[in-house]
Image 1: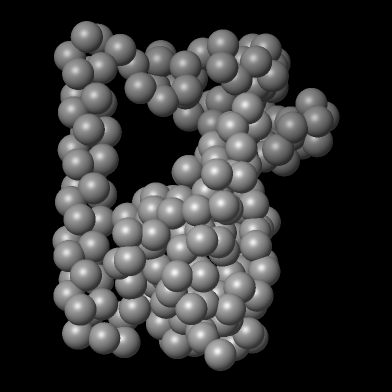
Image 2: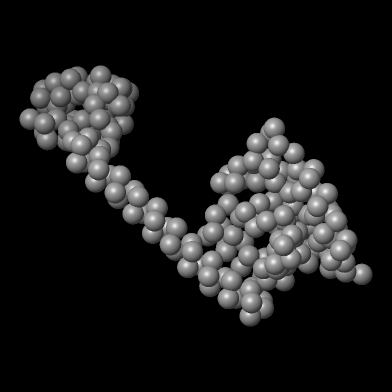
Length: 201
């Protein structure tokens, strides 16, 4: 009997079908001598964190009921390079490998798998650095255009509306706690209103 495997097929939108992936992976499993334990089909964006069917496969792997996960390509399994690396590492602890239809096996317990993990870790770090750089660049460009960052007046409709009452009550010597209770807001909100008032005056 061959290795026990779960087939995982994913499409990103409801107008697409998993059937082609399933047919190709079933044929691939037969050629490779895999014993298909179950087939899981999912419609979810590549970046979606909560994938029900993928989670079911991970539970099967944890229970040692499968030896391999068959996918048409790695992007069907991983949400990102970092997620792929973390899930491969997790699966390796249960001695479960991810096998792409190209025949490439990702198993961190082998020298080849460890080499791939090192490469993936480098790519993941590169992706994080790029994202950080884009965020910093975007913030700098926004500041250069004179855009104020953070929440602006009007984005705090309740506290902005109550600000005059808070300021008046403080001027009358009322405590922040009394004002918060009287106006039905938190003490922190009162503090924030007064802080903004002092900064603007």
